Image 1 (tube, chains in turn orange, blue, yellow, brown):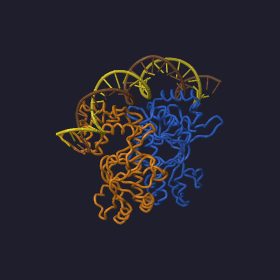
Image 2 (cartoon, chains in turn yellow, cyan, red, green):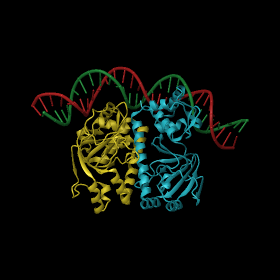
Image 3 (tube, chains in turn yellow, blue, green, brown):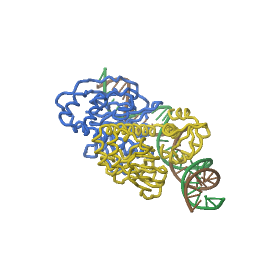
Image 4 (spheres, chains in turn brown, red, green, orange):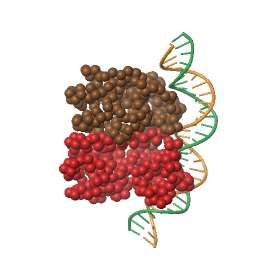
Length: 246
Length: 246
DNA sequence: AATAAAACATGACAATTGTCATGTTTCGAA
DNA sequence: TTCGAAACATGACAATTGTCATGTTTTATT
C-alpha cells in the first residue's frame, strides 16, 4: 500500500532472438510439453528480453499484444488504486506464464503492471501465434488450462486470506509460502531467496509498510524469523504455519 | 464472516439424465461452441441434478470427481477458515463452469464448497470425459482457457479490492457488480435479481454482518439503495460507482 | 570510502472495523 | 394464520490497523 513510484521508461535493457540451441529453457513446463519440432517452431516465434530494476515489462492499461513467460529472475504483478496505493498480486518465478489472464483474450488492455524484481529475462510471443500454437497442440492447451486453474485457485485462496485473516496471520502465511517456493536450508533455518523488502511484503498482504515492519519486528523478537530483504531467514516454520491458520 | 452453518445432507433433490432435445441449454457458452454432433455427445455424458436450499453440491475437502456447469439458478462458492468464519468467493450464474480450478487437475479435493442459493439445476460430467472432450475440441479448450482467464482476472481484482479498499467501497463495488450481472430496470432504479441477504453481502466483501448492515443502512439513508434481500433496488448507480473507486 | 537514497524502526494518535449484547421485523413453513 | 427462525437493526466498547512524524540503519553507487 505504498504510494505510486515515479514513472520510469518501459524500454527493455536488451533484446535478442532466441538462440537455436535451447539453453536453460528446461524450467518451463509449457515448452517441455511440446515435442522437439513444435518447441523449435514455438521458440522461433519467441523473443527473449532482459529487464532491470526500475523498468516495466508492461503497465496497467497498456494494450495486450504479447503472451509472456518468465525465463530467469522474478517478476511481480501489481495493481494500483486511483489514490496511488498498490498491491502485489503475485511474485512470478521462472516458468510462470503471464498476461495469460483475461487480457490475453477478451481484454484489450493489461489489468495490471508487470515489474522485474532485479534482473530478469522474459520470453514473449505474439498473441495470435500463441493462440495458433494452443489450437494445434492439445497438450499445450491442457497445460495452460491446468496452469490457469492453479492460478485461479491460488488467487481465490489469497482473497479468502485477505477477507478473513488478521495482518499477522497473512504475513505468516506469506512467509510459509515463500519458504515453499524459494526456501534453501541453512544451519539456523530456511533462507528465502526471493528478495523482498518489508514494503514488498506489505504490498503482498494488503497492509501498510509500517504494519509489516512492526509485525516482522515481533516475529524477529519471537525468533520466528531473522534478517531483512537481502537475507531473510525463517527460523521456525512450524510456528509460522500454526500462526497463519489460527 | 459468519459462523459455520449446521451441516445438512449433500443428497441431491432429484436426478435424471439429459433429455434428447436440448431445452434451455442455450445460455451455456461452452456448449454453444460445439457443433450439433459433438454437443449431443457431450450431453450424453452429462447428468442434470437439482438442488435446493440448505443442500451442498460439494463441500470443501470432498474428492473432485466431476466437472460442473450451472444450468439454472445461482450457486455460491464458499471457503471457510478453521475458526468457522467463511467467505464467499463468487456467485455463479447460468453458464458458469465450476470445479474448473486446480481441483480439476492437480487437486484431488475441492478447495471450496459449492452451495445452491435457492433452487438450482447443475450439469455434471466426469472429469475424464471432460478432459477427453477438451482434447478433442480445440474450440472448447480455447473457450475454457478464455473463461479461466476471465475468472482469474476477476479473482485478482477481488483480491486487490480486499487489500486496498474500505468496507463501504467494497460493498459499493459489489452492488455495482450485481447490477451489471443481474440488474433489471425499474421505475425507481435497478433491481438486483440475485437474492442476497446482508450476511451474504458481508461474506462477499469480507466484513462482519453488522458492518454490512450498518453500511447498507447508510446507503439507504443516502438514497443509494432501497429494500433488502427479497427486493434490493439500486437507486443511484453513478454515486455507488464513484464511491467504489474513491 | 563517501554519500545519497532506500529501507527499517518506533511513538502517538486517529480511523476503521469487530465483538457482544439486545431488541425488532420479516419471512417461510406447518 | 400463526409461530419460530432468520434477517435486520443499533448501541457501547474493544481490537486492529492506518496515519503522520521523526530518526536510525542499511544498501547501492560514484
